[in-house]
Image 1: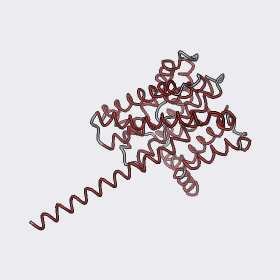
Image 2: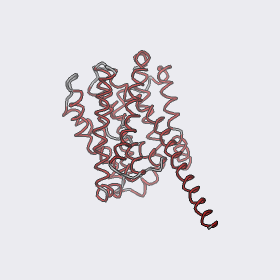
Image 3: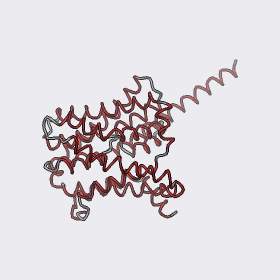
Length: 331
């Protein structure tokens, strides 16, 4: 078990680089990962969501009742900023329907699980981040299909009921099952959780490999356009999430948590829904896969930026304290 923990910690630490390497391999040598089938996407996402459920405890939901204002603000920003941004970017870049629906799916999905790790690395409010992820995920069976219908329903056929059932099946049920298993068998799951980064990263990497390798030719022809849209979507999500939280006078740690939570999406779910409900548009799965790669890079960079800001502020505080002490001594 200790060996697995070490491997898990290593993979968790270098996840961004691993994701980039696998994505590149899948793009340039698709035959090397062709054994990973796109039909596995739903099962792999279910494994990730089950793992998320194993990490949840009743006290993670206590923040919802202790600080409902913070969680409500976060959830509202999550489901307004990202879907609206996705729609605006589709118009601005004049995306064809098969790409636009994929981008909109990314925007309408809940926050990603890796956002909690990035919030921790950023010295943000981790409790708020975990609660936001849990709440936005629990709301996703209703809001994800409803918002997809709102923003994409005029250009493509969106089956609200079928999408809702898909989200329940691949997201909600595995999370609830993981939560229940953790509640009754916590003694064993506490040990299993230590290797979750290994399991979750493997599943996410396999989803990316399946989608990228199956669409390598299409990505090579339209990859720069998709990457540009995905980068704008993600970075503007971070900026608007932080800015709105700041305008609402939340403290810095909460602003950081909301920024990361808003900007990082459950792109695996977007990929799953695209593959299941928009199979007639092969390109619809690509934005989710590209987002999975990019947001791990941008999240790590944003955490580094926030840490630099913290160090700078602490250094300034120490200088002021030293100056005040010196002035007091001279007096």
